[in-house]
Length: 404
Image 1: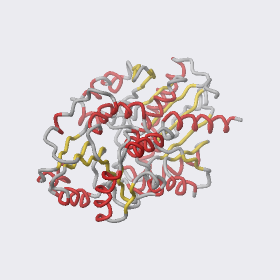
Image 2: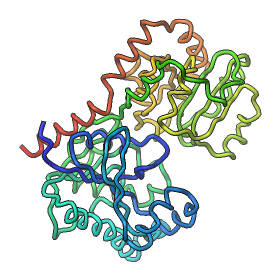
Image 3: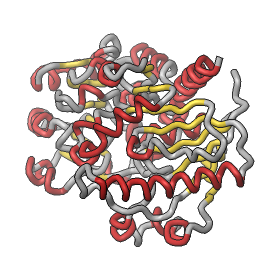
Image 4: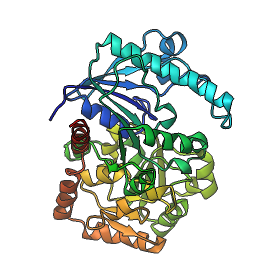
């Protein structure tokens, strides 16, 4: 496998996003064999003012404000790569498509172009691949007067039209990115269908899991987290962000009501107003832990009896291949999901995929009763076919094919 090139990555998620980032996982896997340069999405003035008291800003303050000390070598699980912070950008999303928007956007693009050119010079980069992961407003950032990439890749991992804030300019910019890219990849069947309408072949490179991390569930001596000490009965667990756009809150309420002797545990960030709207915080058998570091999730999943993916069935979720499916399977746990996408249906021989609330709740009981050692081994074996190692090898193959 040819790996004699560097990789420059620019994505929506910053490298130290506390939630699991597929872009970061791709970067980490590439970095096992190649030099990787991970460019942060520029912090806007709004970002800076809102987050300046938090660590993600504090460790970047010099770079953001002065353009100095832009490089940070990051080491995760023994794997090193270089993270790069551009200077502060101008908030432009408030403007409609106009000359003002175009001029201010050009300024922001030049911020990234400058750090790319500087990185190429400072690290003596001769050959590289450019990967833009779901940040189409910053796709055209390679300076014309520097080394050009072997291949420009655009990656889509969500339906951009369904997120109101980024849809404003993102829909148009994504079409431009697809047209300008040498190689287009997407994380789900639906996204491949959607982006394929613009005349480019779109390759499905779906999400995956760090199975080694989640296999840690089988280590001895894992202590039950404090938040779970008062859990009663069986533990039904969901890990991930709660969002009105994606999560079927009514289903969560029905699970809590229908299983009063068991505990529904939800691990991930949420909006207080959404929880209050559905009164989830009023149930004695619902535990909301809030955000947890990715590398700590297995310590919670260790004590789960069943895992769930309670997504709404809508236009947004139709395009989702959820990261958590392979994380749950890597733990050998039973999984019950709503029937929201072609991708989740592809797991139908291994998990329960249900259309209605009643079927979903019934399947929780059935999966816990039927789950045994052989089923757990089968789930783990499937997860081992869906790792970031396989996904990045596929990506390397696509890069090699393009350059042959």
